[in-house]
Image (cartoon, rainbow over all chains, first blue to last red; front, side, top):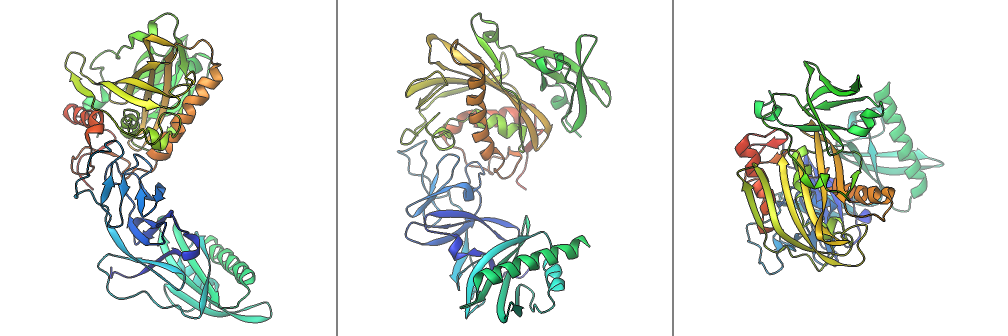
Amino acid sequence: MTPRWIATGLSQDLPKAVVMAGHWQGHDLAVWRSATGRLQAWNDRCPHRGMRLSHGFVRGETLACIYHGWVYGADGGCKHIPAHPALTPPATITVASFACVEQDGVIWVAPADMAGAPPVLSDLQPLRSISLTCDVAAVLAAEPALQGQDILRATVQIGEQGQQVCLVAQEGPAGLTLHALCGVGADKVAVSRWVEDLRRRAEMKVAA
Amino acid sequence: MIAQQVLNEWYPVAMAAQIRAGQRRVTQLLGQPITVDLQKGAIVVTGQGGALHVTEAFGHVWACPGTPAHDLFPIPEALEPGRRLVDVGVVRVKCSPLRAVENFLDIAHFPFVHTDVLGAEPHTEVNRYEVQIREDSDEVWATKVTFYQPQAAKSAEGGIVTQYMYRVPAPTAAVLYKTCPNRTDAWDVIGIFVQPLTEELCDVWPWMALYDDVTPQAELIAFQQMIFLQDRSILENQIPRLLPLDPGMEIPTQADLTSIAYRRWLKKRGLTYGAQMVAA
């Protein structure tokens, strides 16, 4: 499988000092933003007892595990073990990092050594992320106007007007997620309803 | 293929009072379907190959699918007059039965998982304690464990430094002894009896033997259930679900001495149902 950038969420859904679950091609990630806004994507597992770090908590520029409070700094290294406050944790205790870039309001992840930048989605504004129980093929079948494989684009008639719609696909353990963007100045509520309708139509394709 | 030493151990399969009240329990043990019911006044556990060895103790029904390697372990305190024995009920958890036991032996998580009840920052330090595998009884014991607790029990008022002892008398059972807020000369006793449904799914039966004549039964049960439901949010989110016995897979510290001993004890005795032997 060729390493590539995968969209794992929208910037607007990850405020400062918050952590969320992310995925990159079968790898579970903890994606988090520090108090000053620094964005990171890590392997979603505390090396101590295997707890998901996406259940943890952000304090300042660190992410802590919810199980025993082990604190990890910006470089992924363990900085503090609360059960042993006087101990300097060995430098060998680290969490693996992924490349994580925010662009056009979308959070993109890739392996740490990924070269190049994520695809550009200019003249669009982020709308919402939506989960589906079907695959991309069903989405394309439901709306033939959509073009593309991972980044689906179309100009669709919504109400009186033609609207630009862009759906960035992400396959995760729980199924497909589409990160939806729309044209700048578009009626976000109307496009959001259209996306929900698309989901209904795509999921019915599978059921049928 | 399940190892013979695993089959020869005792496992909790039901609450005795429920079976005696006529509630038949259709469940699983080590991945096999079993039924627990009352036949002519006796509790019987039936599997696909016929009747299993059965014993009744500490409010629960215990079964052995093989040939029992020994009698079920004793909890002498359960027989002391004046104690209240509390069957808490059952909590189903999507994790290895061994992970459920290991979490019960852990103190360092109290400030983060049971915040402001069994622990609170900045009181996070785990002082050195003693761990041994007792040769006579073949049990794991941790002693001289101390920890600061804001509300150690339903009957506790305000924070106290609680003393603990932990004991693993069977692969899927653990018992702790902790400072009794009402008495200086006795320990409260709390157990968890874990029924291995499969290697990655278990039913956990907490049980208590307390000196507490005041707190209503419903409140005692609600307190213990709240604690265990907080633990479940951890147990269902550990990766992998199986308990790793390969020392390279996870990183213990001095605070984890009981867990280290428990893992070694399981490995040495070949009690590896629910364990991961090599990193996946």
